[in-house]
Image (cartoon, rainbow, N blue to C red; front, side, top):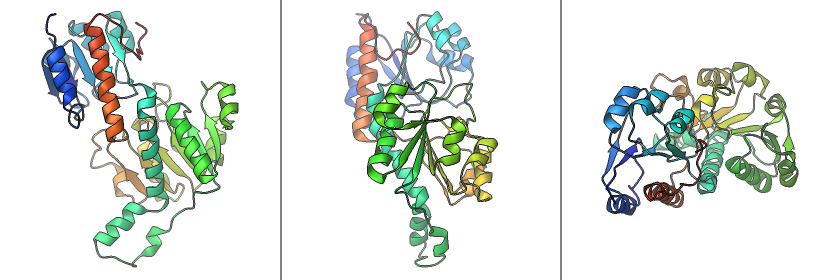
Length: 329
């Protein structure tokens, strides 16, 4: 069978901890090349650099627009190394006969849920500030900066109750005796009954929850789902968590709410601009804890993601359908 080529785009982790997957692809498919592009790279530049590559393993950036698919007739598959696919024009890919796939939800479920809980603890107990103070020999000084919040017997609001949202809800319900409120317009009522959670509208969740955790996809309709008005609905003691997509929140409004003591803190594994810009106001605040979009970065999850992408490429190469197709082919 004729050799084909694989481009790994903005996914540093693919094959790093498990190099055998690159070796498998090189042996069974053909050459593998890693690329790094800016978030705002043009479609022309992408098409020029990726022409001749049949398979693209894609990170959260850049965006593959309709023009890219018009200009690059070689691509057969775009395999997202993650769950979200808002950076791919699905209709254009479908029009050109290009499969778009994502990771299976179960692969990332525990990893992302666990970093969500880790960020919750870091914000609620000011752990990052405390760690920095100890490293700077500030033991027992300015302890008022470290006053935190209790998590047990509170109310957790989940925005987007898919696999990850459900896992976070389970942890907060079973581990912290929290009541779980859910905003998810696509969730069947029967699922809510089975999980013993309360379906509400967005405003009710934001008004009543002590902890609000975002786990929904990013779409054109829900960009800045949490903005100045929505932040005004929240308790001043609330903690907001975002382990989905940065653009779900208005970061400037979040920073202002924390500065004005209208929100206790913010923990996120995603930002609107990645890497985060040095002028981002979130970086100035003690009660903001950020990680660089590494929610899936544990060995078990990374291996599962590498395996899934490898299987998708092998299937398309052999004339079979890949799994987890998201663009209707």
